[in-house]
Length: 159
Image (cartoon, rainbow, N blue to C red):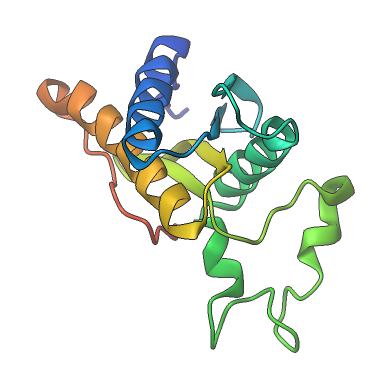
């Protein structure tokens, strides 16, 4: 039997607050979703002024990153992005009733080498979504610093 780490709502709250702070610094209204390992939301928060479509998009990105264990933009990154035309996963974005997101803004949450959830952002451009997502991951790393757990803090994550 395996013992697994579980992302808790308090952990997710710290991550959302960091993403909101970074988004505020950049002057962009984002929606942030922190999902568990199954891609189900622990928290979805839409900043004031963020698009009404943001919660669904952010959830889709968090779902994809958590369940497929890679940053969502890597699906379309040339030359070997698996969702690019002619590659093995072309069309995957049609899976799960369209929930599968293959564009920038979703990042798996990897602790001690295991994917324990995903963070998804919607509302900024690609660079802004990446900056806010990395800020959320860094906040979790800072939170867990004294516990001996290692969090991957990067834009390009593939497990």
